[in-house]
Image (cartoon, rainbow, N blue to C red; front, side, top):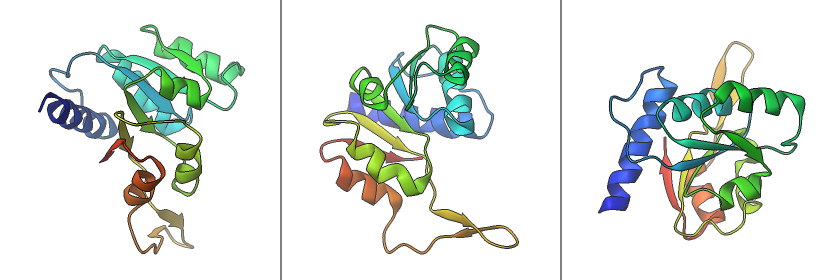
Length: 156
């Protein structure tokens, strides 16, 4: 049950971060891999670090100037590594990548057995006048779970 409690706490923290809220009391501090350093990864990474978690950003180019700037802005011991290295160093992995790339990226992260894999992706596409749901026969979280057997996939 402690793992379930941690999953629920982390899922709540992801939701609170996404909504701009701050969790009153986080779960015990974790090392969290943020796979992606764009807007979503940067926003979640900063919030996780503010809550006492250690953040490892997974980037295709961890030595890039913009990634180094993000690590410095995040503070609290944040670092950057390749996506597979970030995932290997963390018990919790958060995908902050385009939904269309999520499955392929997850397959490249190595063995995620026993890890908590948080999926905040949404199958959405730009329509002429706004965002539209992309018709897929199953959920992106189901696809990610198939790509990461043994991981505890949490949809957030």
